[in-house]
Length: 488
Image (cartoon, rainbow, N blue to C red; front, side):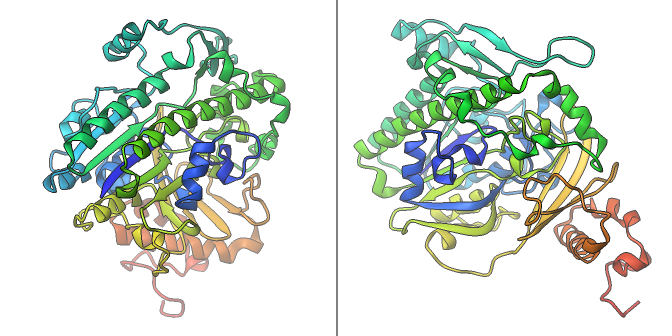
């Protein structure tokens, strides 16, 4: 079984037609969803690039693999996986798989994709490396103009300086964009693998639609800002929320940007999604032309989402909202019927799924479950809640989250905890952690989170202990674990 893994960076799930967006043109991903399994509750284990991608590589939760922050904004954490860490490409190589990775590598500083056995140009970093010699050679061979931008969009920081670049016009034709370059290199790799005849794993990791959104005019102006319905959470007041969220909003200069510019930014983001969809279409078309579709499983997902103004924020950060934790997840396996699944699944589950499809042992991917039974239409026992974690970006900030069908609890040891009623408040505007009517929910979720963290070996549960009292959770700190009610 061949494996084609398509991945974007900082991609909102609600920008895709197959996930309900009526305006954004994503025909290629829509077609993939219509012929495969679309997971409606697909989540990242952590909304930050390097830890999420390391979880995909290892099948381990971030607390276990220990790559806890992006190295560009590191705060004293490890910058590379341990030498003895399990990674799925090692297992695939033992089964004689050809291994390729074209695009973003953001899983460490000293070891690159080639260190793990992947073919492809070495493209490290958080954003399109437009000064890379292979990209320069690509432009020169085709007589294409170099990278150049104008009309930057940015806000103003609290000290009066220009804020981070959010978007700009790119003065290149689509054929010169970094996205087109990546798709071209992926197609070339696909052709080489097809000629060889051995099974392959080929990943294409786009750097977008991560901000800043740098697009040619045709995509920068593809969508009328008047079509944009602003996120309901743009009404965020941060009342009763951790103060870091208000501070982060100021860092990203949201309130200094006119609302019509925010609409334009979202419209430009949509254009970026369409540009990437077109490049994915080129890869999928070539897969069909090479006669490989019937022998190739195709994945599409992202490392995490993006705020684009939701909760008066941009980028991602220390706020565990659905905007950045829920991500697209589509898997097409030959012979499996199209469907939509509602189970809570994670990017980390892709690791065991890759191993399973390749005929490898899935056990070393210790925090990962194979999605193959779900893709094949089966109904195995499956967890009814989802865990996620965060460790910091720019500064240390530990968080843990548990989400079930109706509620979400977020534990912030250095601040106030959060509890959201997702049925009554789907946009997560009101923190109901202290509301007495939700006390039974809070107790249940706190207890369940504590037990799950202990079972996994995540020592964060020690941070939670001071939050408990006998009346709240029947917790006795002299015992090794929670005790059932009535046993104290």
